[in-house]
Length: 187
Image (tube, rainbow, N blue to C red; front, side, top):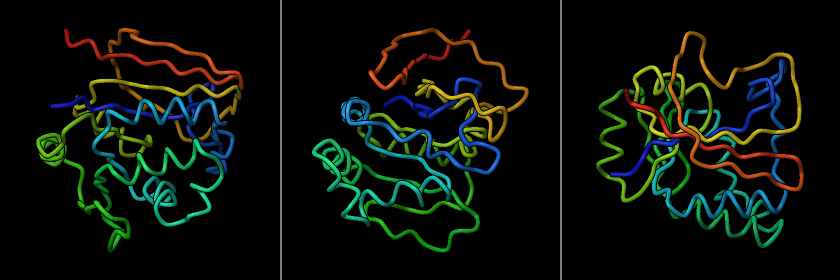
């Protein structure tokens, strides 16, 4: 079975959105998109909450997203080939292919997704990751640090969480973003 990876864009002070809920400052350039696409090659399943699913569905539903550049087209192809599991108690249906809706995030639902997967799984977005982190289901934390300080907003990590982590990769991009990847220490 693959790893469960918490993949999230973060301000330098640890926020995923600003105080108004905006995360437009996380938009990657072509170099970063190419790197994220290469990373996504090992991902067979995306685990989303409602808001992140609604944001990411454009890779299948909006042809203009993929038409922006060759890197965007490659990412859209990679995203569409993967399975998606959306955890939401308010969403009535999903509208992308290879996608199923689960009403509650549970350890059993994550284990089921892992058993069905032929690669890694990513949890994207701090709301859904909060539960998975507290249930100790996350194996890898991957932060895309963006060169901005927000001073408040939605935190990348929930209050009261303690994780021992081991750095396994870091890479800097020309736009000032830095990707750091940690494996969870299980001691």
